[in-house]
Length: 201
Image 1: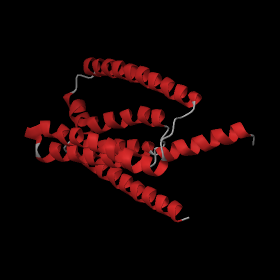
Image 2: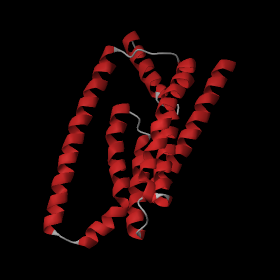
Image 3: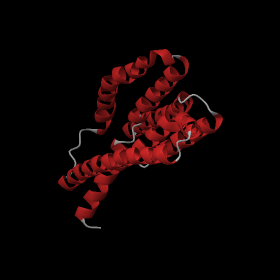
Image 4: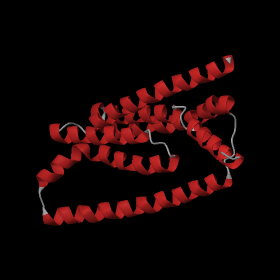
């Protein structure tokens, strides 16, 4: 392996580690759990659902900066990686727009062809979880964080169970949030432990 390949491999490992601290996972999980809880127990105060995520966002950004950069250092990625990330963002934007238009088209097709209230009643409990699952896919692509795919599966399965059992739409969000937050907490503990081990060495 030549020097260029070695540097590319080193950067790839560093990039994976830079996004594997678990703070984002923990933040998203807690936010989802809160949104689900509000939807279930305080549906008349739906506006509260956005309070915790909005409050936690600055804290999560600051915590990640302190937690990761103090241990990992600040890294400026190579020009090819920055270019690739910009292309990925454009691709995600285009895919999101197409997905939105496709969803609207599908809604009108289903609405006009079926005109069945039972279909809407079945879809409604799991719809939010399914939308979040779909939104997870481009995020996985942009971050190159394939660990997010199981989260999408959890959201999708949770939405299906909610629809089959006719549960509140908040239940799959709450359950998925607990799973994501638990995974994030484990990652944070492992990241901190790995840092202690490297410091001890």
